[in-house]
Length: 224
Image (cartoon, rainbow, N blue to C red; front, side, top):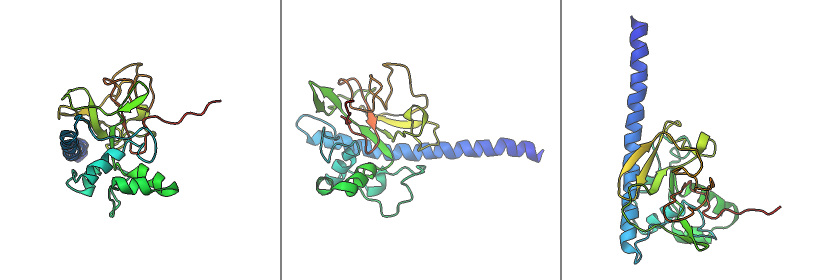
């Protein structure tokens, strides 16, 4: 009887903890999303924070740096997920301000780009006539802005934040959804790849791509 009870209790406890972590993470992402909307309200074109096409700011996590630089994050640790296996244990974590990113060089720049977005992924914008554009706030329910950070070590580049069991995504209209099944078919609505299947900026304004902190909107390619 005890064995039967334990077999029922522990899976239920594990699921309860998972749901608690998801809820806590959604709260963090909601705060970041609020910062996105506040940033948008300050821009003449209503654009959201994001990476630039080249240079030190060409990393998805620069969105977090812009939020921090404009005092639109409640705290430095807002960008850390409670269930992340990577960054959550860094006690002195802080988000670098834009000027710090601009001045960084070499290994320091690489380190800042890798960590400045914390445990979350951010919109990488989209290409328009060869230039990088940031999405504007049209309150669309299908355009993702922030999510649990994608991982190259996970199938379909899903997030490792919740043990591969799903990723929270914050959308333009302010809604948050736990996405469990990431599409892998060509031209599907994959939050972590553009319609060409690349980790890069979207192909147009309807192609939303969320990148981990160091992901570049226009990644370098080497001709053979």
